[in-house]
Image 1 (spheres, helix red, strand yellow):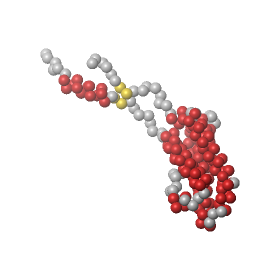
Image 2 (cartoon, rainbow, N blue to C red):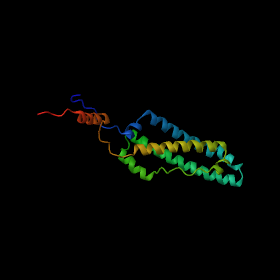
Image 3 (cartoon, helix red, strand yellow):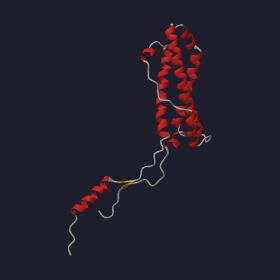
Image 4 (cartoon, one colour):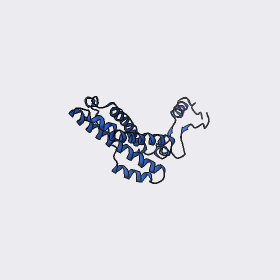
Amino acid sequence: MSGFDVMFRDERDWVNFGDTYVTSEAFKVLFREGMTLVEEAAAYLDGTGREESRLMSRDGTLSYASESMRLTTRLMQIASWLLVQRAVSEGELTPAEAMQEKTRVRLTTPETFRGEVFGVLPPTLQDLIVRSRRLHTRILHLDAVITDERPNPAPQESPVVAQLSRLRSAFAAPVSA
C-alpha cells in the first residue's frame, strides 16, 4: 500500500442548514401550515369557540379561557418565528438581524400539559391545542438547529488509515545494514 491516503475530508464550505432551510420548499410548507393553523384558531375562537364556551360550566369556562390564552400565545410565537424566517429567506433580514429579532420574539419551552383541564374542553379546542403543541415542538427543534453556532468540525483521519499505519509499523521488516 504505497501512499494510499484515505481521509474523511471535505474541503468545500459547509452548508449552513438555516440558510438552506428557510429557502426550501419544506419551509414554505411549514410556513403555510403554521399560518393556516393561526387563521383556523382565530376563526374558531372568535366564532364557534365563543358559542361553545358559553355552554360550559363556570369551571369549564375558566379552563377554556386559560387554555385559549395559552393557545393564542403559542400561536403568536409560532407566527412571529415563521415571519422572521420568511423575511430571512426573502432577503429582507440577514441571519444576524434575525438573531437580534429572536431576543424580542422568544420561543418559550412548552408549558406542562394539564390533562385534567384538557378533558373538559370542547373537541375543536383540544384539536387546535394538540396541533399547535406539535408544531411548536417542531419549530423549537428547527430553531435550535438553525441557530446552532458550533464551529465546523475539523477533518479527522480515517480510523482505517490509522489502523493500517499501526499494522505497517508492527510488521515492518527490520532494516538490515
